[in-house]
Amino acid sequence: MSKDIRKGSQTVSRLTCHVVWVTKYRFKVLKRDIQKRCRELLIQICEAERIEILKGVVSSDHVLMHIEYAPKQNVSSILKSLKGPYFKKLQMEFPELQARYRDQYFWATGYGVWSTGNIADKMVNEYLEHHRRKEGDDNSNFILE
Image 1 (tube, rainbow, N blue to C red):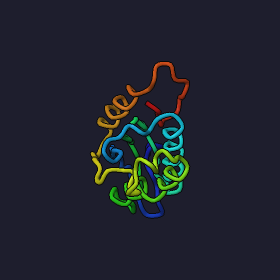
Image 2 (image 1 turned 90 degrees about the horizontal axis):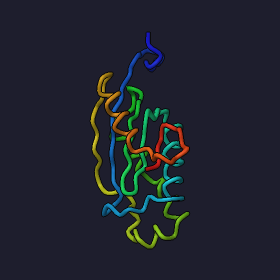
Image 3 (image 1 turned 180 degrees about the vertical axis):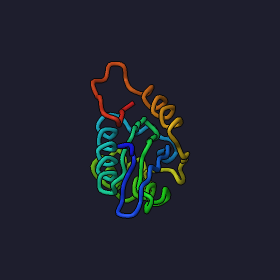
């Protein structure tokens, strides 16, 4: 069996998808320290939820992630966690976000999601990789654009 396969007590799986969501009003607020902190929070959430980030990008007004998850999880719940109350921390830590988002919602309603497979995985990862800054020294799978 491939090392990419996730094994549970009674399951064997490899469920992957490409998800995208945007900041409310598409404001370009994910920059510098806010962008870095956003990535840190997303990594923490994924680790806590046992979601593997295959590749990801935090852009100035949206987040793209290629993730692998367990069969007991569903994409809707995963996105609820990724877009959820954890990001009130961002608003508390960065007063400029609180001033801009008076209604307390940081992310726009909704998201995009596409299932991926072995061939599509490579294409999605290549697409996300092209966001990497040329001058950047960050070699992680979660890129800051």
